[in-house]
Length: 93
Image 1 (cartoon, rainbow, N blue to C red):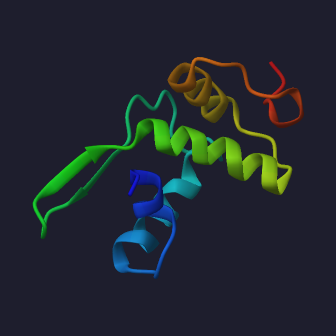
Image 2 (tube, rainbow, N blue to C red):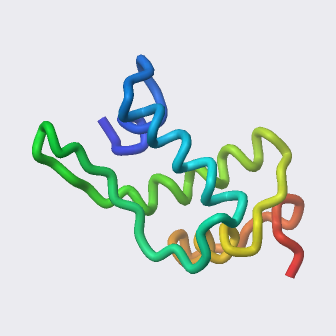
Image 3 (spheres, rainbow, N blue to C red):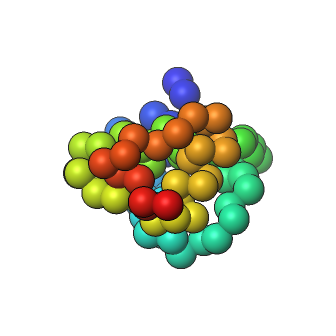
């Protein structure tokens, strides 16, 4: 199972609800110059880099919901995925 599926689908748990709340802040520009996104579970003793999964999820959600990305979110996605964001969800810079 990919990290994205583990974080964003399936039966809601405290972990997935926390991930969803935190995830919602990145596309809105609440984090500037985000470098990496790490998921971790202290109780189970694991952590993993989910940066690319989150960048893909930002694009997927913006396209599904026809929302523009904030400038910081656009910069994050373009840096992580090494591709330009579609014009209709671009921050317009």
